[in-house]
Image 1 (spheres, rainbow, N blue to C red):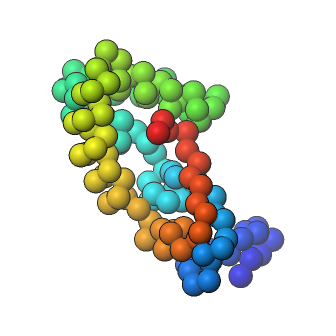
Image 2 (tube, rainbow, N blue to C red):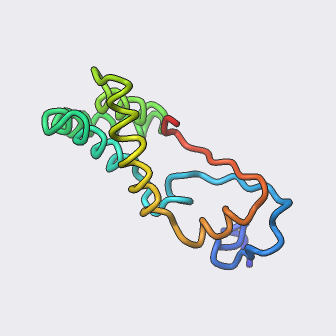
Length: 133
């Protein structure tokens, strides 16, 4: 039930039956995914393709990233994570070794089950995220 502080009902109270003609829009981080931070995914990508040195570079850039993310804009923080994780990598390395095999496994294991239940029951679905596609 909705209250003044929460205008929408909690996802656990939402029905998943009869929503095939409805449209849903959800934020990926913190709504569809349990975790709110994209940092672990970028750290995993940096380590998988670039090794320990790239992961160290990402860790050194993380304080600056955090400042941008929380005090300037989420998009700016994500762009620094992207820069630190992917600088100098070949697109084929990123796509083949990480995007297909690793990221999909980690994203699917971090799905919030109740959010996914409601999200997947709707006919039209849209995901908002500051992460690159």
